Amino acid sequence: MIERARFVTRFGLALYAVVSLVFAVPCAQADAIADFYAKKNIRLLIGFSTGGGYDLYARVLARHMSKHIPGNPTILPENMPGAGGVRVANYLYAVAPKDGTIIGTFNRGLTMEGLLNHTPGIIYDATKFTWLGSVTNEATVCGFSKESGIKTWQDMQTKSFIVGGTGTGSDNDIYPTVLKHIFGLNLKLITGFPGSADVDLAMARHEVDGRCGWSWTSMMSRDKANYEAHDINVPVQLALTKHPDLPDVPLVIDLTDDPKKLAVLKLIGSRQTMARPFAMPPNIPADRAKALRDAFDATMKDPDFLAEAKRLDLEVRPVSGLELTDLITQMAATPKEILDLASAALQDPK
Image (cartoon, rainbow, N blue to C red; front, side):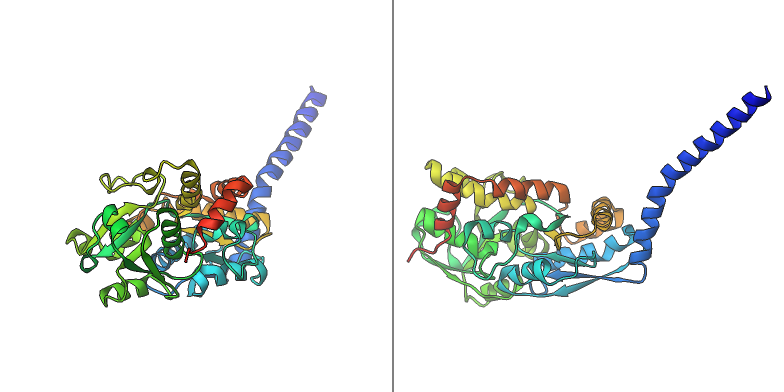
């Protein structure tokens, strides 16, 4: 009996030690993350000027994500406009510290620009970023001022017009170029505006007629009253599926029967799945990358975050960092023939 009691005691102590070790490892990891981030700042770089959709989404995220990161670091939004977000993407890839203290957001279209050899100055490989996630996936549209006289897709086909863009690689540049190439539209693109808010101002001044590559959520958050008053017209959706708010507005992929043109439109339209992406540099320590991804995912369910997003008319249909990683890997595996066709469609025909 004494020996049995000793065995049970030894077994119990051994089991306790194992269980304690199992639970201690995650606790130690959590403590390490908290110790690292405590009293630190995380810079959130925004590839556009203030006032646009990317800027608004980033600032709302910054206000709520900190409390979900162990150690509760302060997240500081910082605008770094340039070339439609290329400046931020290059900085993340080649310059930023790879320690989990830098996050960036830039135009979703830049994920495929390296594949298409369209944008000069790119030094990053989108497949190597540590993807944090996207707040939403969404529709992008063409929007025109009432004064432009463009209300329908037929108007776009039969009238000349001017649209504004924010730099090579941005939706506001990509989509007009593709539409001009594939459908032969008589449009002129004036690019180089620091951000979408600057294009809106140019519309108000009648310097441009509209935008193609206008995020529906941005329009609803900043120009809903103008849209509902019919001061802004939306003749076409630049997406793969119709947005529930726009059941009667045609999809661009339904406007051609040419299989090659359709393949190009679908490839370029796939960027809408990652409508508001956030990324970190390559090779972030795995435990910090996981902590930040977990914090991002938790923020997407945070009642305070959701309440502010609703108040600002921002859609929240999140895509996780792992899902973005899978999507970009699939894009990188696109057959060369389709990539070549898409690349040709991005060269503005003269």
